Image (cartoon, rainbow, N blue to C red):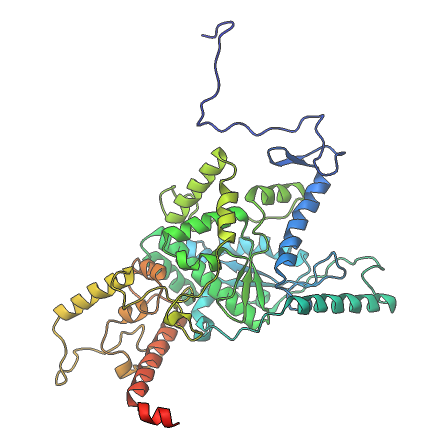
Length: 495
């Protein structure tokens, strides 16, 4: 029982101290006048207007600091120096088929999403994840990237844009300083009016995700297919940049997750501001300075319309996947040590996109078939994980009875899923296991995830077709190299 004068002592050191609440005497740390309504960090209490200015400034500062998006590019547009200079398009990917949602549930979700997209007044696109089964193999090829402009070119482009806006304003048109801003008008997209996906594609997508054994591999596969679909949509509609809403908290979790998945060589691309692995389309992350707490407060204070849909890991236990485990680990540490997310995030900023030494450093170096990063494996180095996998596979192949020149194979040389996508390449397949041919074109992390897929047949056709093309191309190049006549040392010296 409680006693008078009893000393209860200090709270346990493992328990996090409660966040300070703004008192009536406390004022906004920015304007020093208004009453604070939100506390971002300890001692950082903002009023409504100052918090909005702080939130928007971080977004614009991130774009201005990197100077990656030039005025006039198809993306976002602005009328004055304090507004965005490029007009974005918004895309929504319906992933309900991967989670086993019915057509009625998916139609209900789309009915909630479309009014929000129309209210933005921007070009909007609604695509279903099943459309990956109709993508061309060219989506997995890195197109030529335009040379990056210099700092002087960026300033010249900004000055030219502002001068054009000033001339339009002086000529009586709706310039940046005159006229009232008109509300945006919705711009429907032909894709948004398309009907539901085919039942065959929906069944194929459901079969693909049902065949994956682990939740970790499902999440990685979903992210890969989503990226390929968005990349194809960007190229089809002429977008050179793709903006994602990855926050500082999500990037810190992603950095630790990718380390556990064996993607340490690609952290600079996976968590940096820009990702140029696709060549002509660059993925940028302008919200990487915002925390999840700031995003949640902004949506709450300014009534940002939201639609909540279940994900592949919804209601999954903490240890169901590496992604869920790392998320719980980082968020739990953040509650006890508030600098955890910022420390991990600042570490990711110091990562440099340096090419790997060796053959992969060239422009024509092979890239992963799924994530499209440079192959981080080396078959010549037996100490690497790939060398161990290759050695075990070679030992298994040597233990089996090899085919001689007089023997004929009992079945077709290529499987129905790989070799017959574009026709058998005979020598290109080399009578090898089709799954081994595809694994040779994957990085270490994607190769580990593919182990949770029992068969390659459920994969989308564009992945199998591109794998067959790369195998045939490598075989043809090898045959040509054997037939070339090299110049001798004396002839090379005389020339």
